[in-house]
Image (cartoon, rainbow, N blue to C red):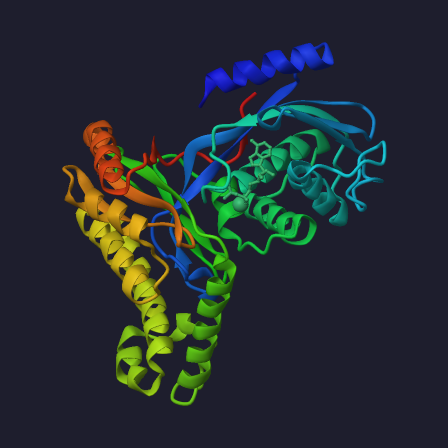
Length: 393
Ligand code: ADP
Ligand code: MG
């Protein structure tokens, strides 16, 4: 919990609106530990909510007008249910892009006939924006909590996540899957989340208390990656189409066992075969994770993370030199159980599981070695699995 940020928005709220905020909501970012590029193949993902979050100080206005102050953008926006469909403010000016996320949440609630009263809100976040740690989902899930609190209705956390995804897909216009909002809404302290992307059933599995999740941002952002992403999806669909000749019952790569795949892979074009092998084996790895973590076998789990990196690098081909450097250095350092690129790839972050008492030294050594190999400094966050979106007070 970042009490400094909570104090900061409490003071700003008091100055701006002339009274203390009625409540504070908190909603975390997330990182995915295992199960990469399998969500759209109906596989399993293993994210955790992290202890970096968006904090929202808010009070009801008693009217249908909502006024937002985004501290990190040094801007305000104000809207009502009437102005939301046109993405405008009460004075007719367009809503700034950052306000599409909270306005989208109100839009999704209105669509579902759930009451979303006007509120005054001041908010800030220590989730880095645009680094793949889902700052956008944390904003959505934070406002979901705020409106739930004022509206007098209660939804299960997965339902809140689905409404947040609807807001991002249909109002903001970003075609994200369910993992981001799910992890931000459903996180549990010191636990990983295991989500079945087909049924949306989920459970938590333990992460030892003496392990830190270290996130290392390469600071590399590749442009034009959506084309590559679409090509990967198309390759997976092509693999299913071809494998159906021998396995007529399959609907997605989720339904193909590693044994069947090994037997039939030779019938696929080389590139399709590589892409599909990653997905089939990665789903196999994520299925092993539960038993390993229940048994406290963090070493073996870390090895699966390392295998995942190799697979994303060599089979799925979504890595880049900087991610490979970051993972290689991490894997050579003391206290590191596993390291791999996380998220869509082509830049962004690696995720590392590190013995808690070595996390500081690990992070320093990783930053130094990365900088001396690439010439520029990375950003490193030591974090831990934390609770999902909640009312702090
Ligand atoms: P990420 O991977 O961090 O989710 P996105 O591009 O999906 O990256 O979302 C980033 C956008 O979410 C920002 O451009 C902004 O519009 C919104 N956002 C994130 N954090 C904040 C914040 N602290 N305050 C206001 N808006 C935010
Ligand atoms: Mg996002």
